[in-house]
Length: 76
Image (cartoon, rainbow, N blue to C red; front, side, top):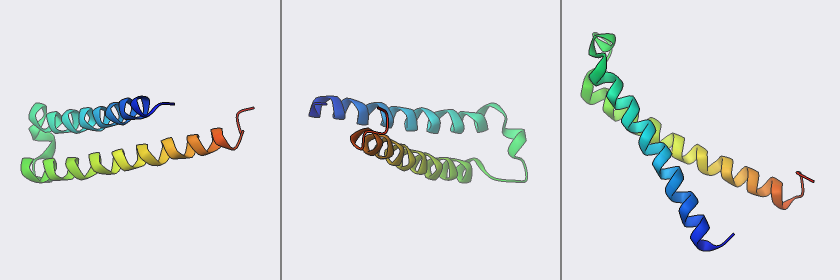
């Protein structure tokens, strides 16, 4: 895989995490009553940002796991 391909993969993973972030933040805007008494919009957005960061890190770990499996010949 070329460096350009890896950059493209990184960009796609960033887009997945960003899409998750946007979607989860939109939930508050669409159904604010579901959050009444539990969290404010500001707190929800902070929680979503943290979850999105975790998602991105987990995606990196998964990619590394499957790269390792491939290099070790686990898919022969």
